[in-house]
Image (tube, rainbow, N blue to C red; front, side, top):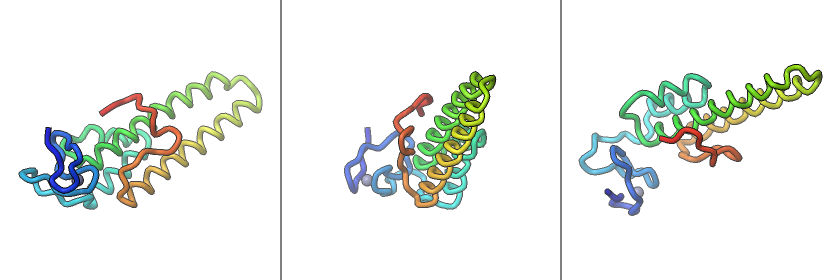
Amino acid sequence: MAYCSKCGSQLNEGDKACGNCGEPVPGATRATDTNSNDMWMGILAYLGILALVPYLVKDQSAFVRSHAIRGINLLVLEVIAWVAVGVFAWVPILDGILSTVVGLASFAFSLIGIINVANKEDKDLPFIGGIRLIKG
Ligand SMILES: [Zn+2]
């Protein structure tokens, strides 16, 4: 197991840069930290089904990888939420309230994720960040 030469954080196999401080890993392919490709891939992670793109494309940076996993988990949670909405579809008013809440929550979480990517922050979404139905 390798460790960052700068901050001592544990490095995952294949990391091109330290996930903690961004220090490039010696010997790895030269990492341009959070370049524009990373940015777009990170944003895709929060655009519903498009999260599959950064998730399935190999050799992404640790930054894209962790956002892709967050995006996939968000997608799975949204599918579950929409199924739940479907279950209550026969209830007048409640179905409207539920679909509005799920729609707004999906939008809000995607927006928070995209803002994190834009700020080059590798952090979890609030409230649902700890829910990992799909792991790396
Ligand atoms: Zn480091």
